Length: 206
Image (cartoon, rainbow, N blue to C red; front, side, top):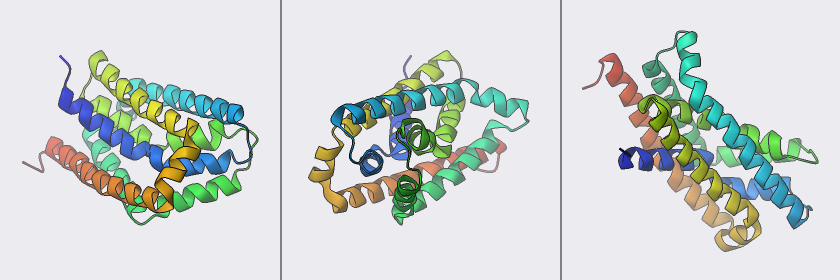
């Protein structure tokens, strides 16, 4: 049976973490001066690479944690703290500043694998999130639901990259800033929930 509430939570969490809206201007900066065909190729390659990486961590992440002796509850708390720091960066615009700095420093002909796929899309936050979500819903069904949300978020990101110029003109810098801060508030609340779930697993919260 499909857990609709879990799917919604997973989608919102991944959408906020990957932040397609915030990545759109970064994609434009990294592909400045390229043709439409080149941008399309880079966008598709970046999202496919990120999907493969996140699928690997969703499938094997909890097994790796168990092998090195880290409980899922401890990882939930650590992941929640990490996501909260990401939320603070989004609220105070530090995240976009770092992304812009990376796009200026990492001047490659093809930025699809690095820095787009890694670490801008499949970074520490999104990797931690897929491990946390698959830990909440173990088994093949949970993995399938998490991957469905991953693919949905990456599909939205791909569309926004393909139409990045249009989105930038529609939202403008102010619009992107407002949306990013709203997503930051939402992520802060979700990260606190992860920490509370971890503490509850240890018996520290009711």
